[in-house]
View 1 (tube, rainbow, N blue to C red):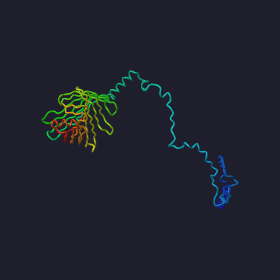
View 2 (view 1 turned 90 degrees about the horizontal axis):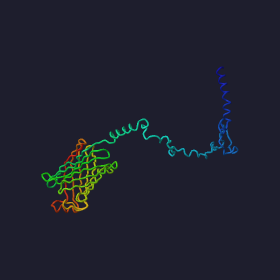
View 3 (view 1 turned 30 degrees about the horizontal axis):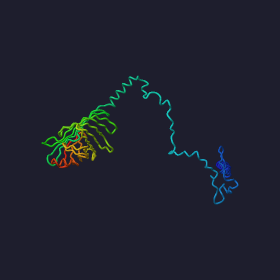
View 4 (view 1 turned 135 degrees about the vertical axis):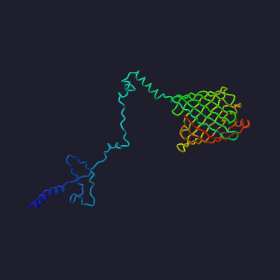
Length: 332
């Protein structure tokens, strides 16, 4: 009897709820909510069947009364197009000294600290000596030698450069020897402007030149030097050279090199003609046992051009030559 009473009481409590649910209209507003404006009149609503379902094959859209036309406030909701506010800095942020420490320390103390920092970090003096080419040249006729050295001392901006290069034949006379002393100043992060003096010890007669040039890196890391020389006899010449380190491995490096010499006039006593006088094309393959010590082998082609070639033929020399190289590149 107790179980039967529980079943009867449960059924009696559930029946009114089901009856009320069947009589409710889905469009009736819930308490506390505003019903949307209707665009379809109640008279046009199709007849309902059992349970409130449409009796025909299709029924009216239950969302037909929702007006979505006024959505102008959502136009700027796109996160990719929305700009962040960029308010100006408050005036107080731009007031006061440039360095906050100046508020706590005397000007003399700060000046001494800045000078120490400049001396330790920004004005550090260093040096480097580069033996770029120290080689034996195997060629037709008598074998020869060549050196090309340069070193500098100074800071990031100003440096003193010393350069020397020359060549000769084993068992013969020194063919060419020069020394340059240059003051160098960085004019860009990549280039230095250089000015100074050059003295030629060979060939004779000796000459002294004023020098103005550029040295640095052009795009793609080509080491480049270009200089004008004005001799004590008023002769204007120029030299341009460039090389590039092509890493085959971390230690094996192939270096192509080109050098061209120019003259503004004929210098017969030196065998130099006006215009492009000589051009050199070289290829050196070095192996860096350590970065500071790298022996190399290579080949180089040199040719005299124009009037310079005519001067060479008149002196019994050929206008061009091929040289096979064995040498050493080092720095410290």
